[in-house]
Image (cartoon, rainbow, N blue to C red; front, side, top):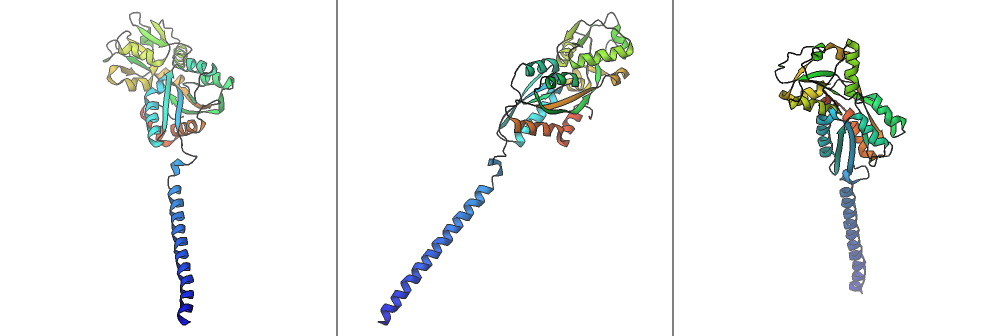
Length: 272
């Protein structure tokens, strides 16, 4: 009688102990599961991914390429694709329906083409400025020391097309000094103008200071005071039909950040 009673009491206690142990194990598994799912924040909805297409002025090529590489490193799973060229032709492509996320122009005038067409999302923001410089052959064999020297009849000079920001700025500087030049060619963007000098197809070109610096010892730069009258503001904008809005916003934020400004200043750009 006593033994049977003890057995009846013991079995329920053993069952309760097993049940409690099972509940503890289940709770532990549940707890560890929630911790592991909370750790990889990058897997959440805020993670950036996919391609970001940036249309940017040719003069931004070196600095934006550097920033694009940093962006991809900071946001694994993203890819930044650039289309560099004359700001006017890029603006025309955007208003013509070319898919892009970001537009960085070398002048407010060319940005206005996009904003007037209603293709920008929000107001563009100036992120840097740029100043002109004369690019000559290495060693400056023609002894160019001023804007006036470019008017010499035996000098082959190249300018950017007047519709391109670098060309419009050069014309503004020439007008300020009362000079008239007859270049051997007008180029569609600043890199094309600089290349003419690098290939020795021209003796000099009026380009941006940043492009002279990027060319290294392939050219020699000559500063001129009239450039102060033709400094270009560079605006950047998110495009209205951007295929990858969140990543585009993050790229613009990088460009405007202290890190981005350091890269741009290192390339010779002026602060806005």
